[in-house]
Image (cartoon, rainbow, N blue to C red; front, side):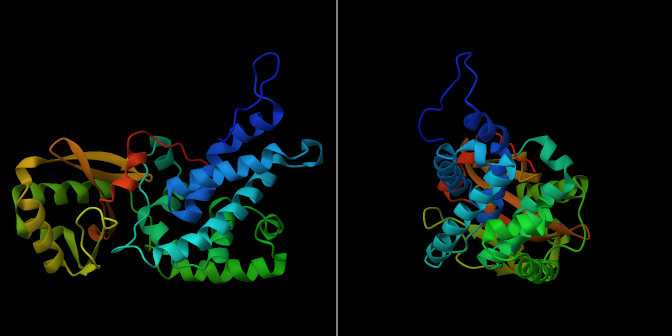
Length: 304
């Protein structure tokens, strides 16, 4: 937070700070789901705090709803700026991965909503559609509350929610995949890469698998999506196969789902998440941009 929070005589935070801290994890989750960036979500929380610190609490009936409303508005402002910035991004853009606590995976709806695959689907929504979808489908806010947050009337919000829901349903995985199924696919993927077994790699990849790599122009990554099991398998086997002796693969919980951290010569090099359907990997998301890996050093608490 910006500035130094005030404290009461008994060293407890003042009421404004106490309320903000009580809902901070929720507010971060709202901002992160809208932006796909932890760094930008933290900036939004700072803007929210600055506005919250100047509010007369006596005029606030529901502090949680008020804070969510301010956070949503700030996230919408930033989201529109980010949309323009991402047009000039070098190569494919992927969400910023988060090292998450085990309790995130236990909340299936929350884990699904912050998965790399879902965040990429949310990227295809217009800013207001994304805000409405997140607030309604993930946080179960009422249409009246959402209307205040996005400056629309409730009837318009219902229409936007219906449109966004249909858009997401057409693009999201057809069913929720268990953590065990994802771990099995990742283990098979890792063994095939480590042993250089091209056929085993082909066996775990769906025929229409898509590989996305995000180097941000800083680290080498595929400049465009690679589609098809044969192309993806040969690229991965050739690329990682050449440096197999210098790499290690560590399982991790990323965005509420099993993933892999690839270390090169002892340093974090890549965070690799996957989308699994029918026991096969249909999507591979390799984040290499160093600016996006800072939140992989400690667990991030998410809540709804």
